[in-house]
Image (tube, rainbow, N blue to C red; front, side):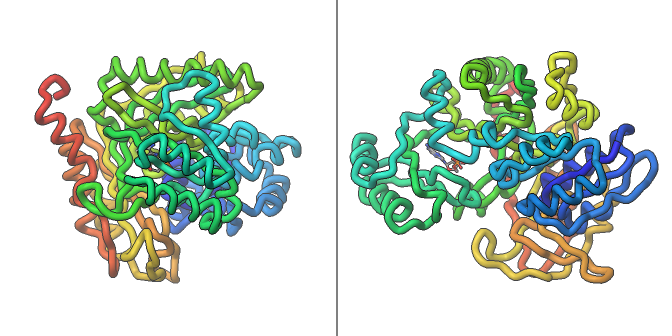
Length: 439
Ligand code: AMP
């Protein structure tokens, strides 16, 4: 089976790596891919994966490529092409593609839609409302005591959320988005949410329009620096599972969120085939949804796919065909940690083209996989090409050993200005140490 994967990050490297292990795969293209993806080979035939120089937003280019090469399945990684309607476009042209269509992708592409959907269908979330007038927005922020999250409605490269501690800050955030258009058209409307306190975790569920198969828990680390300090990033590392939600609590949280979500989708005629990834705050009043994403998380995917036992092609096929109820998700008993190595300055300005040393040495370590994100080939060398450069992932029977293995690999890799967090998974390990129930 020939496959086309769309995207260029660590998530897509993990997807390609896992798809390449399937005996069903006969060829894989990745558009545009990265230097690590270009080094992958199909496990059976050893056929190399081919990177194709097309942007994930170049829908006409991707369609022309797919028409010419006829992949049996196209797999979409990032949110932007989904929001632009790549699934609808491919389907209209008779091409099979996995991911939510444009209407279903609105769970991520419009925070106002997602929030109103949650209120309509009784899904546990923050108190919130959406606005396009600054005064009404400020009045609502005042009713929350000023402590709130002000969010641009649309996709804003992961930067459209401003957390506020006071009413003056909230007013400033509202003006920044609605009056000064800091996020352009994505901020024509805003959502204001009450500020939720607690531990943040990620859920993922593979959906086929009728069924939602819940993954184990995972946890991203959004802030740039150790101790959850510094600016928000796309994600500096992940681990799976996390101890902060026990297995029974995961099952009941899944039920509280996914059952009304599925009923709501059916009632509103939304046919969701893909990954629903709710960001969750574990509040004293129970788990609440902060936001919905409509694709695999990055870097959660790197932690998940190194634990997944199933054939990924079979899972994606079932998600597309509506036959997920015939499959069971199977997870290996080990735990995974992914440490993101980023360019100096990220998430602000950073330089590109820095040579990366030590990748071969790291690749020889057992139970370790270095997923590439922002990398490119420059002659025989691999150089930095983006903010998040590598997702160094390792797995072991327990999280503490997995962390040690991931950092042992990180210690072998060098590039000028590299920065990474030293505490990925540390809180989870600490929790396990202090809570023998989970050990
Ligand atoms: P989002 O893109 O909506 O997940 O927001 C980005 C980050 O902002 C989240 O990962 C949280 O850390 C934080 N955040 C978002 N909404 C809230 C909220 N209502 N209360 C507290 N923190 C929030």
